[in-house]
Structure formats: C-alpha cells, structure tokens
Length: 435
Image 1 (cartoon, rainbow, N blue to C red):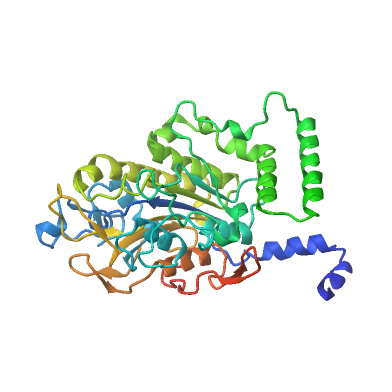
Image 2: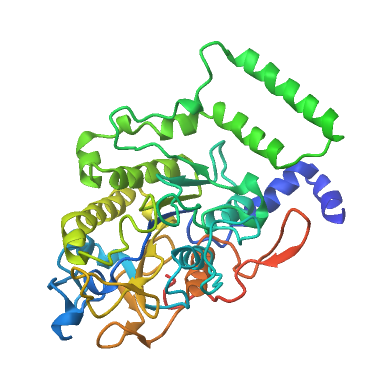
C-alpha cells in the first residue's frame, strides 16, 4: 500500500505498478525463451557426444569419432553438422540419476529435476510442473500466445500406455498445461483450423458469446473461477490471436530452409518451435517419440537405427536451428536444450547389437542464451559408465535452465489449494556452464 501510494505521486496507478513488478521478475534473465529437444527413450551418449575410441570393441561400437569445431572434443561420426556447432555449445558428459527401468520416472526426473526413483506410471495432478509451465507463470508472454507448447506428440509410456509425466502443469493446475500440437508439421496440409472462428461466427457474434459465457460462469459459481474457466479464457484468447495463427504457417518459410531442418515430423517440429518462440511463446518442447519405445530406446539395432534415421534427423534439425536463430538475432536470448531420459549401456548387448538403459552416466547439450560455447563440463570414465569428474544431476541441469530464464530455482510457488512448494530444492545452477 505504501509503495502504491508513493507511486501515485509519479503518475502510476496500481495496475501499472503491478505490471512493472511483473516485468522485473525476469530482469536477471540470460534468455527470454527456451526450445527443448527431448530425445525420448534415451539417446546413446557413447555413439553421439562421448565416444570412447580407445575402449574395447564391445564398448566403442561401430562408429568412428570425428573432430568438432573445438580442438580436442570428439563426437560420433554421424553428427558432422552438430560437431561444427560445438563452438556454440556446452556439452555435459557427467549427468546421472537413480532411474534405470521406468521411462516415465526417468523422463519426469530429466524434465523437472525431481527424482522419484523407479515409480513409473502416467502424469499425475500432484506432479511437479515442467519448466514451461513455471516460466509461463513467472514470465508470461507479452502477446496473446501460449506460454508453453508441446509437440508433436503427447508421448505415451509404451504404445497405448498413459501420457508420460514431466510435460505438464502438475500441481499448478490444468490451466498451466502446454498447448499441445498433435498434427504432423511435415504434412502437406498441415494447419491448425482450431485457431480460426467457424464460418458462421463473425467477430461480433464471438464477442457476444464470450461475454455471455463470462456472465453465466460468474452467476453459476458466485464469481469464483476454476480450471475450466481458465482453459476457456485461454481458448478465447487463442481464437483472437493473430500472432499464433501466423506462427503455425510453415508454408511461409523458404523451401530451402525447410529442407535444411529435415522434411520429417521432427525436423519440421523443431522449425515450428522456432516460429512459436519468435511469436512470443516462452518454452517450446519437441518430444521425439510417440511412445517411449519408438525411437531412441535402442535395445536392438542401435547402430542401424542411429545411422539410418535418428542421427541424420537430429543432426540436420539442431544445426539448422542454431544457424537460423543466429541469423535472426535470436540465439543470444534463446536457450536450446537437447537431452533424453538417460543414456545407453557401455557394453553392447547380444540383442541385435543394441544398447540398454543406462542412468549412471549420460550426456546432454545446451546452447544459446546464457550458456558458454565451446565448453565441455564433466567427464565420464574410460568406458562411459560413471562420471569421473564434476558429476551433475537432472536437478542441477533444471536449476541451470531456470537460472538462464530468470527464474530462481529456489522459488516458492503455491498449488491451487495454497500449499507452498519449492521449485527445485535439490539442484543448484552449474556456474561453470553459465556465460
């Protein structure tokens, strides 16, 4: 009240003061937005970002190491474009956690920083919220666009299983779930007709319906709001948001650029993520699998699947994204995170030359807003089995992401019942990673 009273002498009213306070929430942010490329199922760190050329054949595998743009840093041979981007990246080679069997629990751990051991199962309303949901609360977009978008799948815990946890609003409530885009951006007829008014609804009729709904809801509930009202309000906003309608128009992009991202569902999803960030969305998450076992979960044919499909697609999408963001002047303020739920076993199995789950040591990549370029943090041992230097947990990684985005990792938020939760109590930002 004192602050508001003093501000009135300067010509500021209370709403203006509150908006100023909101703006200051992100004043220490190194980045304004984040794109998460989540390699769902567990990418093989040994065949990608942490090759072991001197290890025995049953560990080093079929792929040869190649140099990157940073002297002394090697990648697997099927990431040549990614390797040239190393000068812009931080690679963490010493991540680890406790979950080795349940994909759901490992995904939840990687995306929220909360390790619940091997407790699997689908998403729950008492889960901790994902980064996008928190940033949407703390730093809502300046325009009428969704703060957080998930695409192109709600990844299932196995084919036909429940949705994995870690991608949603959890105890913040359904109104803080991401907008989910489930259409294939690579399809020739890709569009989101849900974002346009029906042919029989003109703007004035739409406004009248909206006004009636607001008055009916207030009368029905005594003026209180619930999750459904919040979801309705967001739907109304999206239907009147030209920025969002324009963002999903991938046909506006040059064909050559679309080709560079890769003409597949994942490459075009990464391109769409960039367009959403450019429109004002804070966090866009690309979950690279329809279900946990479909893509990066390479228990069998690890080398065939990586070489023929997964690595070329990732190589094109990631390297093009960094070049594209840089060309648009966006890379400095956009954090890009490439991570999975865990790594793969150092020793190749006998199930068609596959690698199995390995949570004891794995790698991930950060680039852009707020992190160093050309830096490797931590190291694994001679066979990539355990961290040998500077071990980090998913909580540390998530705390670092929050730090870049101007959200204190020890921030206390309340759920819908007013109960307090500390956002990421187990993690600490990794100072060596921060620019």
